[in-house]
Amino acid sequence: MKKNYLESILGLMTLILAVSFLLKFIDVNTESNETYDLKAKFLKAGGIVIGNDVKMRGVKIGVIKNVSLDKDFFAVIDFSVYKEVNVPKDSSVKIASDGILGNKYLSITPSGDLDKVLSKKEEIKKVEDYESIEDQVSKIIFLATQ
Image 1 (cartoon, one colour):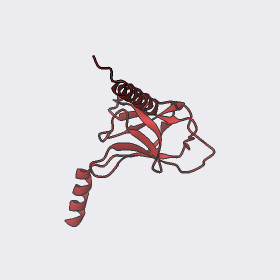
Image 2 (cartoon, one colour):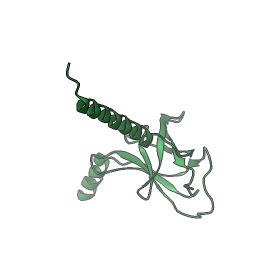
Image 3 (cartoon, helix red, strand yellow):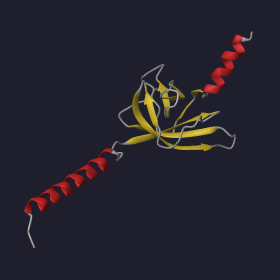
């Protein structure tokens, strides 16, 4: 039996490379930042799901943790925000999308006094309800017929 050390070395290098890519993949997809939880109530959740981003001025600052209905049938969205980001109390929140067919995300717009910030489990009161493409088209048609 012929021993081929070159094939053995290449196989070992391939295995090491695959394991290093796997470890890097796990490291990148692991939530290592400390967070605090906030929530907001909407009339329509607009297709937002667990795991979608929370962004402030286009920068990811957190992740959607839960989407549920409360006793009054409002869509309650629980989300976490990175500890180093302080969300002002007077901020507004809306559901936005990355383009026509893009993912939905929660967009927070800071406003008001930057010294007063939300703490754990607080609710953002200023909410802009989600408008689907169909809603927007129907508004345009309605305005065009007047």
